[in-house]
Every structure is written in structure tokens, then in C-alpha cells.
Picture 1: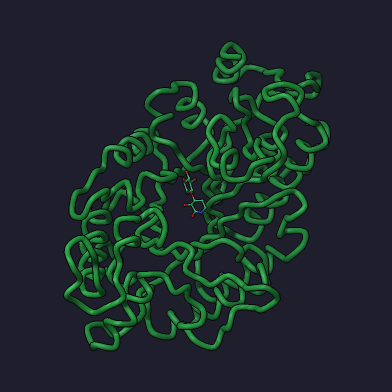
Picture 2: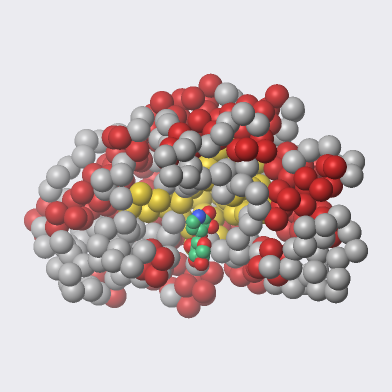
Amino acid sequence: MRVLFTTAMAGLAIAVTSCENNQSALKPFRNVSANMLIGTAVDPEALASDAPYAELLARQYNIVVPENALKFEITEPEPGRFDFADADRVIDFAEAHRMAIRGHVLVYQWQSEWVRNNYVDQYDNAGPGTYGAKDVKAILDRHIETVMGRYKGKIKYWDVVDEVICDPVGTNNVDRSSIDTILQHSFWYKAFKILQAHGDVSEDFVSYSFRKAHSVDPDCKLFLNDYGIEGYNGWGEKSLAARALVQMLLAHGVPINGVGLQMHQTPDNDPSVTDNLAGNIQAWKKMGLEVQITECDVKIPPPRQFGQDMAQKELQEQARTYYNLVKTARDNGASAFLTWGFTDRYSWITWKYPGFGAALPFDEYLKPKPAAYAIEAALSGEPFANDK
Ligand code: XIL
């Protein structure tokens, strides 16, 4: 397999699936994508230990996002102790290969366990090892200043907040009447409600975080990122809640530049087919927002025998979905399209969604799957070819 991969690296014809006759060399995505950055989430350990992984990454893509390395639990594993080893590895690699960088994420209620698990819902005087509202604000300020400040001028796009919008419950849509009913009541939210009541801050944690981020790096494009907001209506009209939220932020002069649509999908849940992804992108653009597809993967069951005989029908459906999503993003002016990893060798899907796997465009041997050829075709403005 290493031989095949090396061959691909040399840009020679490769024959990598059972349909050998129809295979041609896969062109670097970065060379065929004119107006949209094309990228992937990156795992710093793989980058350090797996040379073919790093080569394929550099060959194909022109934007990266560290998958976990910029999250709170990695950058600040203990209060005030910062660790940038993982993030630096990804960012140095990206700079060396002239790739743009997305930062993910400054304010997230997950993967920030030492704060979340020790938050107490009171203004101040929290006991040792616990954090009240005033402490939470100090933690947030220091975190944004330190992490964003370190990469100022290097990271062009930051997810300031991720997954802050309520999920629809049962058959109910999210109540869009106010910011308080749109936002999830995370510890960040609760702390800032208390601070607002005490007059320490004038706004919710989302508005505050965007303003803070803007003050640290005024040239960085600041994004709100979420799932379930990919289609025009979204999951239970969650997209309508997202647009209502951002309208409120804009009305208050909050410096927000873009929205990230995560795009963790399946072939039978393709928002370009079922929920007007094009109209959604256009609606955001009409509001003056930049749109990026930030975490795309298309889950299918794993190969029947891992590493052999992938089910052709499933791979074709997956390819068609990738084609549709990339084409819709490109045709409607999304500024970047990123997948959540690029090889099934490293993917969160395997452990997160039992019964699924193989969600990415390259297989576990780094061979291009039909999805990779579909992405190439969509980026090149070519029709979808069923035989690849
Ligand atoms: C996931 C990572 O891929 C995993 O490795 C980690 O254990 C959990 O988080 N939405 C997001 C991402 O915004 O940050 C998540 O990443 C996937 C869902």
C-alpha cells in the first residue's frame, strides 16, 4: 500500500480500487479550487509520526484546522498553565506549506472540563478549586488573550464560539424570541447572566467573547460555528434560530464575520438535496456574513471487512454527497470547505458512531476513495462521474 501511495505522491496514474480502468491520477484539490479554500482538520500526532499522512495533507489542501489542539483542554490543561506544543506543530506545518489556518475554538462548553465541572452558580467567593461567575470571566479573558494573542496574524479565521445554540427538543423548535431562549444554558451562559445582573458586563457571553476576540486580533475573521444549521431550515428550524441570533448580534454591533456550518452528514441526510443548502448560504451572505463548511464528514458503515472490499454502492452514495456539498458550497460562494480529517486512518466517527466508519475521502491506506474524485470534480466544475 505504501508503494501505491508513493506512486500517487509522484503524481503518476494510480489504480487504487476495483474499477482500475477508470482511475486517473487525483489532482491536488488545492490546484483545482479557484475561489474556495479546501482543507481538513489535522491531528498533530499523526503529523509528527506518519510521514505519508503529512505528505498527502500538504499535497491536497490549502487550509487546515487543528482538530483538538486549540481547544481549551489542550491549550490550557490546568488553570493558567498553557501548552501550545500540539497547536504549534500544526501551525508551523501549515505555514511551511503556505496553508491558511482556522482556529477552533475559543469558547466551547465541552473539552474544558476543569472549568465546567467546577463551576458554581454564584457571583464570587467560590471555594478552593471551584469557580464562580467572576472567576469564569477572568478565565475567559485570560484564555482568549493568551491563545488568540499567541497566534495573532497567523490564524486568519477563529471559531470564537462553537455549539452555543439550543437543540430542538421533541417536536418543539427553538424559541427564537430572545437571545436567552436561543442560547444553550452552558456554564459560560450562566456565569455571564450573573455578571450582567451585577452590572459587571452589559451583554451575554457570546457578544462579550466576540468583542474580546476582536480587541485581541482586529484583523482576524470571527466565526460562530454550529451543527444542525446546515440546511435552510436546519434541524427543527435551528437554522432560523441561528440567523435570528446573529441578527441580534449584528444589531448590537457585535464584530462577527462568518458562520461555520459543521456538516457532519450521511448520504441520506444531504442538506443540498433535502434542505436548500444553497438558499442557506445565500441567506447568510445577504446578512453580510462569510460562510465556511467547517467539519464535513459523510458517515457510511465501515467496509464489510475492514481494509478490503468496501461496499461500492455505499462509496458511490458517499461520493455523490461529497460532490453535492462541495459543488453547492463552491457555486454559492462559501469561502472554505473543510472536512473533519481526510483519511479513515484517523477519524472520530469510528468511536463516536458505532456502526459507522469510512466517512472521509481517503481510506485507511490513504488511497483516494470515490469521494476524493467527486471532490476533485466538484472543485473543478466538472460533472459527477459515476464510474470513479
Ligand atoms: C471532536 C473531535 O473530533 C474528537 O477527537 C474529540 O474527542 C471530540 O471533539 N463538533 C465540533 C468538534 O465542533 O470540535 C468535534 O470534534 C466534533 C463535533
